Image (cartoon, rainbow over all chains, first blue to last red; front, side, top):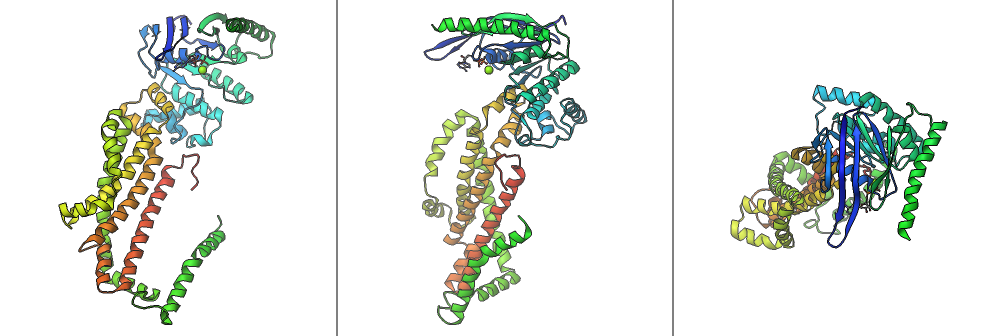
Length: 256
Length: 257
Ligand SMILES: Nc1ncnc2c1ncn2[C@@H]1O[C@H](COP(=O)(O)OP(=O)(O)O)[C@@H](O)[C@H]1O
Ligand SMILES: [Mg+2]
């Protein structure tokens, strides 16, 4: 875990309309090492999604530098897998066709890789199911498989489990860890769930709002799989909460 | 639905038509209404049978279906292509849509005399009329279909690096398919309607001609046969498209078929 996969430096983002301009991201520096798992946590509206979209190349209207493996990010590409909060599967396509997407299942190599992915996200038996027949967790797993099939260097996840119930969410976090360890992809996860961030990541980036800036970076030096009820986990939770509260306390003072 | 229930529903639905036919037959047989104007159902059926056996009916039906099909494919095809084009490209919309919307308000029946003046009673004026009728429903619905595509799915296509071609075939077309199929249904029924108009205005072949010809010889039974054929073929094509819909749109959440 030494080489850098994603490097964001001096990033500033301002949304401009005819008569307003909102400074959303302020001088963000963030680097994601190869095979590293980093979570971003922060109050709603602090610019987490904006940051992730910029990293994905979905939004290229910013100041600063975003590089993947030393090359400037100029637009979206398969190297940067993106998982949206809603699964965004194609409703007219079956699970296997969603995963294959623009590739043809008639191609043996594609067929083989799709089957492998279905195995990885544990959806065997659902190859021919339509999205309407899947639960939220299953749909999100299909979306992850669709991204992973393209062997991305980084996987960018924008609150992927936010809409799931607590039980499914825990289960999905474990699946994601599994997938990460098998696939060795770098992960950048946006979440509003402190436990999720601690359970999954090597580092937690705490963000502040208006304008969005990085307030703290908290390393998580616990071995996997992590025990959610252990003392070290509790201590980290207190630490992250402290950083977040600090952010929110300042937030209040902004409003007075 | 169980078989028994289905039979029951069919019988309930058939109750009124059968009653009408029976009353009609009895009324004619008993001399209550003119046999000339209301030939009894049995004699209409005989006319139908005779025309079927002599090959007269299949011949004229074939001509009519061919006309409707050519008109539908020309007009509907253009409507689909131009509708998709204006849906996809703002520029195309800005150039084409105002004119098309203007033309759409012109009643088709009002331009038939003009078509006849320009192109005579030949095939051209008929097919043009049918094509024009078939154009608008497909144009409007293809356009709407494209504009209803969830823009969030375009983000997905960008992240997955779909080619322009795949954006069209894997995102736009499937998403627009419900609207397109609705357009096909409406276009087909309009094409069929225009066919009736075109053939009744003057033709020497086709079901419409059959009806006009029978009218001038007071063969009312044949007129009835023609009308029923028009209705049945119209209904059949509609059912065909609906079958297509139920197969192509089984992914839809709301689909109840
Ligand atoms: N397209 C946009 N135009 C203008 N403002 C936007 C746009 N997208 C997001 N914003 C603003 O940027 C800020 C950050 O949004 P977002 O990145 O979605 O926050 P988060 O994901 O952390 O909740 C918000 O104040 C939001 O109103
Ligand atoms: Mg967000």
